Structure formats: C-alpha cells, structure tokens
Image (cartoon, rainbow, N blue to C red; front, top):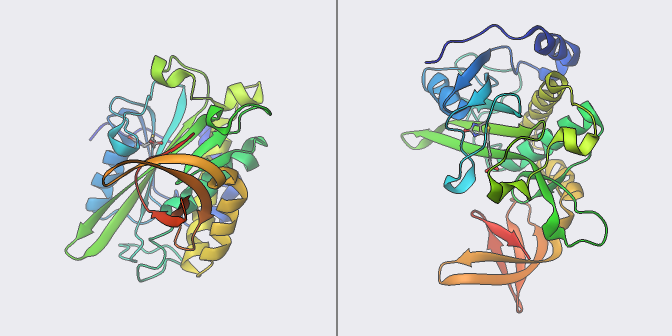
Length: 287
Ligand code: BTN
C-alpha cells in the first residue's frame, strides 16, 4: 500500500461545510500523493472490509485507467482522482444509515454517479455539464457545431467484485479534469477542464466535497426506490440521447441508428431502420 497522508486542511473544511449531506460518506477518507490507480487502492480496502462511502483520493496516478481498457491521464495537479466504495447488496461491515439490503440500487449506480458528479460540479462552480451515455460529463459544442464536437470534462469507471453468487462491492472511480494539461495528442481535441470552461481556477476541495455529497444523496435516492427521479435527472442532462445519429459495435460488426432515449433500466435505446436496439454496455460513438 502507498503511504497514506493527512487530509489537506482545505478538503477537511469543504467536507465540513457540506456536513450532513454526506450522510456517512467520506468519514473514512484515504489521501495519497501518488498511487497506481485509486480504484485498485479502494478495491483492496473494500476486500479488507472497508465500509460503504470509504473514499480514496490521490494527487496523481501512475496507472490511472478508463472504461474499455483505456488509460486515464493522471498527472499531479491536473485532475481530481477519486474512488468511492459502494456495497449495493448491503454487506457493510459498519453500515451507513439508509443503505439498502438487496440489489435494487445496484443496477442504476453508474448512471446515478454521472448525475451526482454533474450536480456536484454545478453546485461547486456553477458550470453545467451534460451527460453522454452512460456517464461521461461533457461540455456541449458551441452553437452551430455538431454534437460530436463536445469535449469531455470527467469520466466514471465502475468496477465490481463478487463474493460467490453475490455482489460484494462496487468501486466508482471518478476522474475530473481540473486544469489544462499536456493530454496525449489523441485526446487533446476531445478533452476540456474546469479551468478552461470557467476561465478561472476551480476550488478543487469544494468540487470534491460537493461530488461526494451528490453521491451520498444519489445513493439514498436509489435505496429509497427513487430510481425514476434519478433517471429523469440524467435525461435532463442527456440531450444527445434523444434523436441523434450514433454508431456502435454489434455482434456482427458496426451498426448505426438514431438515439431514442433511455429506458427505465438505464439502457440506451436506438432506432435502427424500424427495429429498436437496447444497448446496455460498450462504446457508442456520436456521428
Ligand atoms: C472513463 O471515462 O473512461 C473513466 C475514467 C475514470 C478515471 C478515474 S480517475 C480515478 C479512478 N482511478 C482510475 O484508475 N480510474 C478512475
């Protein structure tokens, strides 16, 4: 395990400010200067019994990873690199008030995370980000440019582990671009940061605290059965999931269609010459 550091004072202050909204999340906060991946550290803690709402933050990652086997560019100072332990089936060692037994909250966890982080960023900075299915935070392209010209502000990676037949834990890893950095050239045109969008530095401690409070709220919404409300909040930010041309990889090769929105299980519906495809995982490209 890398060496754990004290929580920085500005982060402790920002967490105290959101206080009760955290409802038990971030009571256990593990801060590091550099790790391989915060998701790996959080998974080790979860495997050793860490409770739901345990948070791992690193100032840099040497092996940050994204969805679908991609890397996540994680130099010091350029981003917020955070992972949170969830126990959707309620196997908490020390349980968080309101955590639901049963798997009902698990299925929409990643969509909820997109909503929570988008709302947290907006509360902390005033910047409104959209959502690209399933849970990328994106800044819409300027008027007149195609939606495909949007830029990515943050990404979320959900990784779970089972214990026999049941889900033991899910780690939600969140990467938020704070300021411009030397992105690999393939990413430079598609990435943006809070500082670029706001035209001023963002208060990273407040962004972190508000995102964690958003995750705590979102969890309790799901646990209380308010999944439709969570989906509605996703849909309000997910304009591109309605009536836009997309491509994706089907079992027999590349397919194209027009988005029809999300169903109530969070799958992306796509109209394909009369038939409706239900996409539950994988990469969708906006054309
Ligand atoms: C994606 O959009 O592909 C998901 C990116 C997730 C990046 C975060 S940074 C913190 C956590 N640790 C990782 O290695 N990945 C996630």
